[in-house]
Image 1 (cartoon, rainbow, N blue to C red):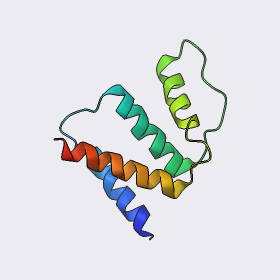
Image 2: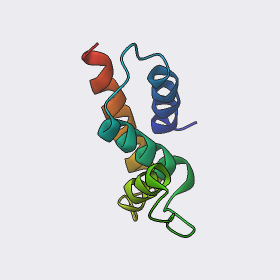
Image 3: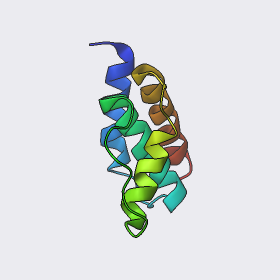
Length: 87
């Protein structure tokens, strides 16, 4: 397994152990980096205007279009490590 993959998997586990819930914008960042790292570019239709949460999540993921999975993994790890350091 590649080092980036191992660090990513550790960060995913660590993100579930955070004692303080990150703010909504940070949660969207985590979601978007995770989806980009695991699935690549966003697919499917954009959720409707009254599906506020689904639309925000889709938009955050779509904003990372073109980002490689490895770069997304590294960004996710960096963000989780930053959150852990603030606890």
